[in-house]
Amino acid sequence: MAPIPVKPGIYKIHAHIIGPTSLVTATEYATKNGAPVITDRLNPLPIEQEWTIEPTEPVPGAPYVIHLAYHEGAGLVTPEDRLWVNSVPRDEWAQFTFERVIGGVKILSGNGLALRSGHRGAQIELVKPAPEFQETWTLEFVRPLDEE
Image 1 (cartoon, rainbow, N blue to C red):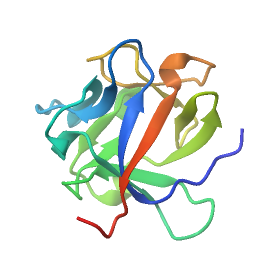
Image 2: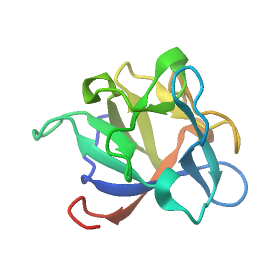
Image 3: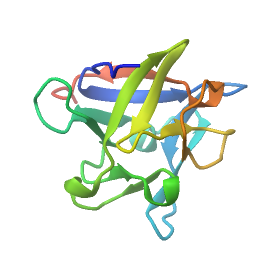
């Protein structure tokens, strides 16, 4: 499928797994590659569950970077084909594209791997894309970038 454009802004990213709403969440404790990124229940503190999605450059078709909305220097990185958040230079952040699938979107890394949430609490993995429910996400637009 062809990539779809995403409006730059602040989002909650919902995982399509069985059970109550699960959101992409940065964990509190860093390990060797940064803080593991998991899916977890809705947390009243948005600090770890609201994400800024913005294009790498202001041209149509540019890939996107994703970082914590309240920590502008903490972006998503993908060592070991797993999702982490880390305060590294922006040019080291992973780049993503989005494709429309039944029920939501598929989020693909720069090397074409899909984000997959196996179950609540598991670290998000990057896998070869397949028509899997655990690879489907919903982007909930919270607000534009210029609003606090």
